[in-house]
Amino acid sequence: MPAPSRPREDVLSKLTPVVTKRWLSPGAWKLDVYEQLDGYKALRKALRHEPSELVAFMKESGHRGRGGAGFPVGMKWQFVPDDGNEHYLVVNADEGEPGTCKDLPLMMNDPHSVIEGVAIASYAIKADRAFVYVRGEAVHAARRLRQAVREAEEVGYLGKDILGSGFNLEVVIHSGAGAYICGEETALLDSLEGLRGQPRLRPPFPATHGLYQKPSCINNVGTIAAVPHIVLGGAEWWKSLGSENAAGTMIYSVSGRVKHPGQYECALGTTLSELIELAGGMEDGHELRYFTPGGSSTPLLTDEHKDVPLDFDNVSKAGSILGTTAIMVFSDQDCPVLACWRWMKFYQHESCGKCTPCREGNYWMVRVYERILSGNGAEKDLKLLEDACGNLLGRAFCGLGDGAASSVTSSLKFFRQDYLDYIEGNKRPLFDAEKIGAH
Image (cartoon, rainbow, N blue to C red; front, side, top):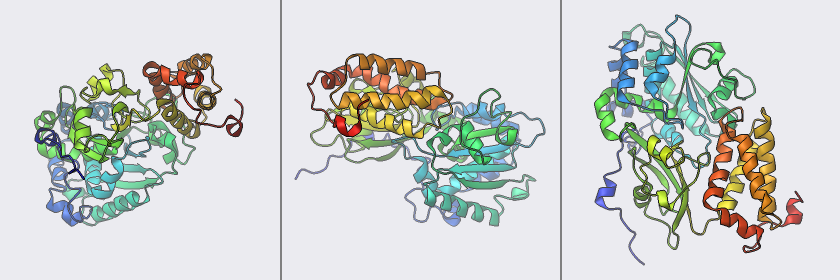
């Protein structure tokens, strides 16, 4: 039996544990261990500065959101008006993108980093209440966060007059009900208010009319957890870790046809080739064919893009989106038509139904896929899929419609022949037409 392959030293150097550096420490989720590993030092440092200074510092650091859009964090904090109103910080921990698993281990292994980041960000935007909205299925993560809040309150890192600074903060850990749509920030706000989780019409934007129609800032778990490290390390240090216009590190969730799927924290700009080598290489007998750079909501890229730096700008130039860095690796033995059908089933199920393009478009595209995969498709079905995507992309009420269309349009662009093989009878049908019904 051959010895398992080891990544080259130059590839191993790509691993840059910052946000993940405490994960392997025994009991890292406990307050005493966290404090031994620089815990809450950043909060003490932040409270010695004015909130406006923290906002300016975060802008200088170049830190961008880790939830998908990559929006500059300091600018987002600055959008919250200093108007004397009650402000809220909301942390989006409703991780549900297919292929993504970076926020969940972060909350499980290092919950105090999230709580410390929440305290710093709340101080910067002058919020005295913060909410962490956790995906309903993440029961253990919610328990860890609630334990961390209790521990922090007991020693004065949360609550009244934090560390004698005069700053007050209450943190609420809220568990959702498992709806993917609540990962959309305004749907999350409605859910927090006790309403059905559906996206809001914008403008007005959450910065001025957010939770309870008060100024609010919404950040992702990974975005917030990096804040204490940036405050301690400095803006220049954070910028030195990434690539141009993409400061810092990113947790890449690598899954699919690799030998060792997992979370790999690397400097932004790491390539797929390097990540695959870190993950032990492709599975035996498999060759890379295509991958998602940021989950199923992002356009597919192919083996030709394996050396594209995986940061915000370079992935955009390649025709996709960095998104949540949920990298699903597919080989020459994986059918892109079948993969898209599975994703479309997901989006059909998770559509909130508020807007017609998403509610109807996803439903009927699933039927078209099933017709093709059962061997009853026609070439005109490809035009039908393209037309449906044209009515979804940019026309749905929120980004779910755009995400659903992305995999379809990109797969038709790169793998049109795979569709035609089912239509022309060159591939064995995967479905029984009678069992799925005639569509």
